[in-house]
Image 1 (cartoon, helix red, strand yellow):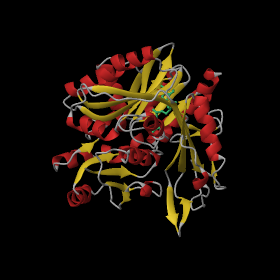
Image 2 (cartoon, rainbow, N blue to C red):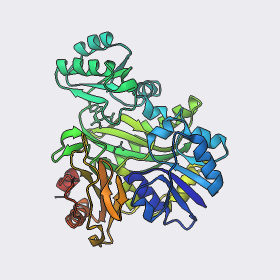
Image 3 (tube, protein in one colour):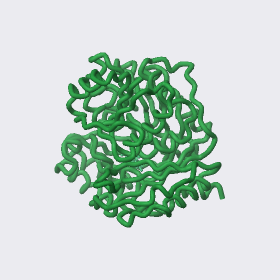
Length: 423
Ligand code: AMP
Ligand code: GLY
């Protein structure tokens, strides 16, 4: 069968790599793709917001499955339009994508279905928000309601910072995303990510991961889309995973059914774990990037039938096999990321990475006059497996040391919590 992936980041390169190993696959397309994806798929220029253009392309190329990578087209309802046109698309409907698109929606949903999360309040004007913030204990978390590319969350340690964050949201710093604000209790603990395929009624847990959101070593500096990840996350023991399924994922799946908007696709729960108790920080309605990279390195089963079973609502009795190995990915970003990444710089030396346990997934790359150049903030994901996180880490960094890219940088401590535990 022919498959179309929408997206062009490291997550989509990883999905393309995993799908291209499937014996069920004939032709793979990716829109827009990138220089690495071009090795395993045909990259095509399609505007995701032009749903009719996507439908026409699928008809022309006989596409049996569309896999939507990023959140924007999901929130824009592309799965609804493709489904209405008789196409199979992996990902949630627009209504179910509200779990990521609106923090207020998700907080109310958690309250209604008794899902453990931080105490909160919603506001549509600055004055009420300021009054509420003044009465709360510090630190306090101020969130723009909508999609703000990971920038709409401010953890305020002082009242002044909280008030300033509220003014920024309502003052338009996050565009329409900030016209509503959620203020919530600061949760203590260790963060981890949990993923599940959901076919409407049934949830199948995937693997766990831990991301590194800050740009600098030691978790310092600005927030980013993620500078590296590893899987599994040791804090998510089997016991905690069981609790995540029964207290968070299952009630979400059932709650979405009860509301008449069943969720299909991959549900990504951002969690805070404190003394074995998981609480939901946020939902995403897609694979994490770069968490997808480490998940796919550990997936032993064929990804393609799993995506189809999710779309078809037949996940009950579906089994996925995972490697016991650990996987770790290090993001190489263009200097200046996240604020002002410098693009166009040449990357050399990828051919010298010849370790079978390492895959280099491309994010923002393109070919220019037969040279590979940086074309975005996050550029490469150097991903390795090993019997321990420490081993995967050593492999990933020795591959990085062979890459000749003066215009790039990476964190040198990805995986530090797990490595510390392993010592
Ligand atoms: P989000 O965009 O909701 O994932 O938030 C970005 C980051 O802010 C999370 O990954 C957490 O590190 C942090 N965060 C968000 N909400 C809270 C909270 N209630 N307590 C502590 N940290 C939080
Ligand atoms: N790595 C975080 C995310 O994909 O949202």
